[in-house]
Amino acid sequence: MSYKFYTQNKTPQTRSIPGRETEMIQGRSGGWMFKTDIWTVLRRCLLLGTAQSTYYAGKHELTSEFIDVVRSAIEQNSAQVAQEILYASDGRSINNSAPILALVLLSMGETPEAKRAFTEIFPQVVRTGSHFYEWMSYTKSMRGFGKVVREAGKAWLSRDDVKGLTYQLLKYQQRQGFSHRDALRLFHVKPPTENHDRLFQWVTQGWDNLPKQIDSDVLAQIWWYEWLKRNPNQTHRAIQQGRLTHEMVAPVGNMDQKAWQLLFEEMPIGAMLRNLGSLTQLGVLNADHKKNLERVASVLNNAEHLRKGRIHPIDVLKALKTYKSGGQLGRSQKTWTPVSRVNHILEQALELSFNVLSATEQVFLHAIDVSGSMSYYSVDSIGLTCCEIATVMALATAKAEKYSKIRGFATEFRDLKITSRDSFGEAIAKATDQNFGGTDASVAYEWAIKQRFKADLFCFWTDCESWAGRQHPSQALALYRRKVNPNAKAIYISLAPYNISLVDPQDPLSWDIAGFDPGTPRLIQMLATGEVR
Image (tube, rainbow, N blue to C red; front, side, top):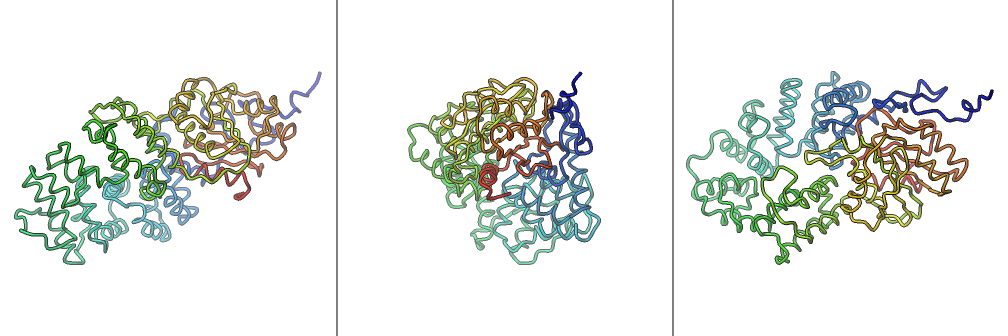
């Protein structure tokens, strides 16, 4: 009789590691993983969001857990919570909804420090009229409009930049069951300047009589909007001279092809991404309009434009998937024949939307979770799955490096036949074709041991629900270090907002990173070189 089975440092993932029980927690899949600290979970929730159900948990359960985490974190350190909200809100979260919800919870903190932190970061998180309405909606539902909230709302509506405020009030006139008239009355805003006064009069009373001429540059867009309401057949002139946006023109003007062409010539990057299909359907974008295609390329294939526009890689991936579908996906009622040049531009924009460094000379082994749960979790309304996003992020990282291999894991380590030369669309197709099965992250290490593959860094792109293996990933990594490379590092990029981790907290060469952050590939490179520890 031998007890080698117990002493060989292999434990099925359906059991906790002997001696480490207090550090581990059972995931929803039944596997045992390490617990994460509250700040890791907070960042995951802020970056990933909890408004979509995953394979193992519904959106109500996830959001309730998110709210509990935010409240606990506020009790521990409200200033740090504020910094995490800012971090996520600055173009890193897949959208601004989770940071806005956390901002509301911060305003509900009981300490003066929490109230002060809320007030300080409010204008940096609530940047647009759309954000403002969403914040009002969550606030009404969760806490009501007390003093700290009224002061924040009043300050937002009384900002010194009246021209910028005018743009927001005109572009977003109502959302989430609120109008700006409601906001002005709710927050009892007193106009600090004459221009504020005239703007607020327009919001609350409208303009029955249009002034004969524009006597304030600050209110010029409102004048042209009101003029267009009275002269809808003069849409082209209003767009050209009033510099009106699509949101301002569409409800009151005549939207023909020329109107769209004029809007396109001044269209900001976010609006361009959202309207590529409509522009193609109307003929503004086609293979023969080289000048228009060059403008799309000059806007979307510019890393600085993407950064300043806070364009998240998922925004670009969503645009690429929607555009390629010809209108079969997304909320558009239109259909179009995709222009191949636009597809190519979007592929390049997707690569540029990630922050990467030059090649590090390190050897990377990317392990994409292709188990069944990764196909279930839709991150966004058009059905972007975790597997698709994991594939895109892994490929973006691999494209920046000389030495990278990409494979997939479920209950075996599969050759997805993805290379760094693939387009993102090609890589997604290859990964989703094998998106099935149970989950065992340890198979990546087992394969690398068998192949004597000397990786400097293992990158796992996963929802962390590993349960099917004969040993824990941390045990397999320790074995790999003994047999192949004692200095191997491991990074687990978590793509679901759970409170579990595959990282052994006692391992200084393993890290847990929240996914969906455009800076993730760059951070991976810095961890690989030791620039960040």
